[in-house]
Image (cartoon, rainbow, N blue to C red; front, side, top):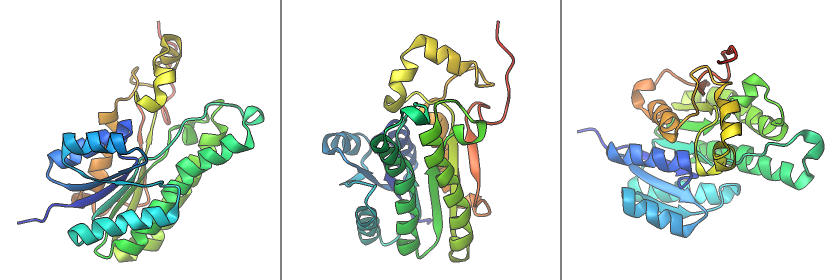
Length: 247
């Protein structure tokens, strides 16, 4: 009988992270959900049965500690996913140093911390999945800070895949377009902004958390054992397809 996989999800209470945990636990995986808000973690644990840990994923030691906890609890780690992130839509000349550094911390530092912890704790190999954005490939206006952070994530994916491949650790990322989550509600709740964004996506709609969670779950599967160093666009075509004006 195959042993149930063990997955650590950083940012487990966000829109994509919580949907991923629902997907994984419904399939029998053992999951440690990591986030900064205890009340959200408690609600997620009650819903999914996942184990939880409160931690700040921008701190390397904190991420190493929670991955160590998962290993101590279940004896192995098969997957680490970093769903921590932020959205900053502002041109560079209007971005404060504090906002820039917070964007880097939330999006790039957390990704590096996940890879660092995986390199230390995934002795049996496995899969690390990070989250980028279609804005890295498509060059959207007012995305300078987030594109810089996520561009770093994509470089990290390729280097870490080369470093840890001999140990059987695969490192990949998904790059979503605009997804309806609490993080993007300020944009998606505005009909004018939503329509403008939909028109940039070849499939003519915004993403849902399930769209991205299913792709992450696919990358975690042992059956994808020959997939590493890849950035998978889960973006309705935003990063690769140019659309004609609708109407």
